Figure 1 (cartoon, rainbow, N blue to C red):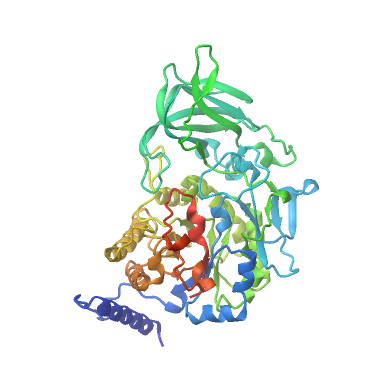
Figure 2: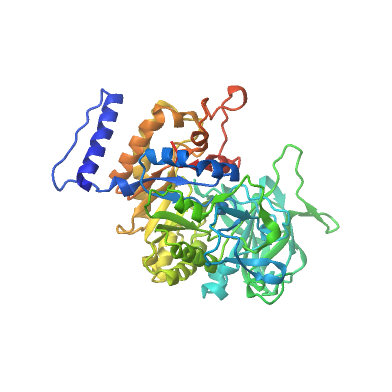
Length: 576
């Protein structure tokens, strides 16, 4: 059966479903030659995905019966999700490899391409240099948190650009407006010699989904040059300013080496901070930190990037949080003998390790369809220019292995509107627009073979039947947003992870979910999308007979987007 006929049959099937459910609607089907909005091959455009599991669940999933049931759903290719990067951690796609500091089994790990024992499990490693950072989703816990240090791959040593183009920052979120006239910074090495301390005027400084509403202003005494390291107490203004957010914006480094030594240049670039506290100075000039009541939320810290340095002691080997090893994944039959979409860790990895991962997969003879670069940089508040600078380094390393490989991203979180952030020097606020512009300015737009994003349109506990009608508009709108941001027409748009909502919710297992999926797929291809997987949930894999979204004693559990619960909505399996 040819592609056009397959497409027509699917369109007619969706039409029949819609007509049966909404008999009062009038449906017109135009089959005039030349009037086609889009064409696609269902066998390659509609697939499934798999995400992080426990070791026990990996052993359960990869059994003949479960694999057979998964394949019986009829989905085509599969995408492999990178939850480790979502959780601000490093992953070792193999435990066979080398450390940059071999004597201490620490530093930056590069997996080996040697074909030894098949890889069954992939482990996550906490990042000690995450320090006090709490941005993004709930980080993988680690025993050795030390200080925050920025990503060395965003310095001129690796980008080939001035560090002023990739300034690094820490945002202090006091959770409520507090009077601030001073700040205490305990610098580690390397420290910033040129930086400024700013306060936010407005609301939502870290709301990249809705868009920040306001602006950063430098404190009257907040701009520093030739600044020292160590513990520094700064009087920023004579009279306290009421603000919720402070930002330390760093543009020049001391280039002094951290505690790991000068043997590796990555230890000696960027910025490192042990502690930040906001407050005031009392009458005697002593620093007094902002006070909080017992019912007030704790201060949190968002950061521009994180150094992926770690050691063997930082491994999460509990068994409750692991990814499927690539040998098990490719040989299990779950890929349906089709090329798979594979991720590489980028925000918290190294280009050499990413290239080695791809080289290993190709040496095994496993087919790769696409490679996703990183995972949800918008959720980590990464700047588009920083993501793009890493993207180009990783692309160069991977294309040395195989220049034919198709790379893409940025793998946005499930959003319904453009991602907006603080304006750059030219006033641009669109994350996607600035990312595309960076690639163009560097003559590397050809390295973007596709644009991928996630689609989770509805709040989990606000869903009604009326909600169903909004899906076609939401899907087609976000596809057009990416085009309006500058994504070229010849760069395919792909939804690589999606469902009714980002958290477990009852309609996922009812006829609502089926009707939503029909609208979702139809509107996606009507909006000129290229490919999308069907993502199903953990409760399907385990075969629960009662509503899995129900909490204790049948109560509905309604997580919110402010509760770090993206990890519970992410246990994805390709099973029905």
